[in-house]
Image (cartoon, rainbow, N blue to C red; front, side, top):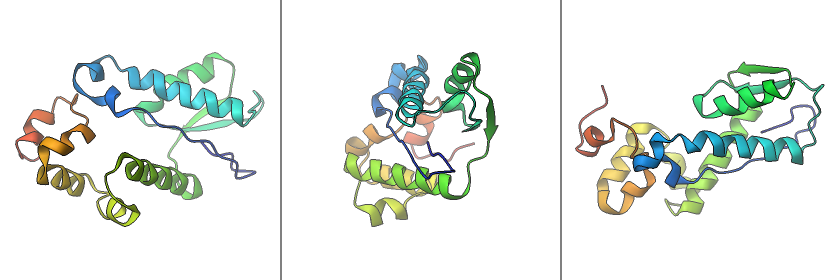
Length: 147
């Protein structure tokens, strides 16, 4: 989350556990993303008169709904520029914290296919970094391309 006018920002993480196995089907990651947004709204002291631009991605759907219900003016947008750069940087830092590699390594495997190839190099150890709750995971686990 980034306040464009001042450059202030807030970020949070959603546990990998919420994307794996049967837990994924409960969509608890949506509730967790709402918590991250709520923490950011409080930390940045966002008032209801400020317009909120929020990513149109599914993971923020509960956050968008909740903000609208609370009376905020919310516009779903494609995140670009400095805000996208902040999100990318925070994502890479989270991968480093998880032990996937240093910043150079994680930056080099930003595409889905390069990350999947990295997972397959040591599947038993690295599968824990994958959204195993996806219905496509069994096929991808076997090395078959996405359809």
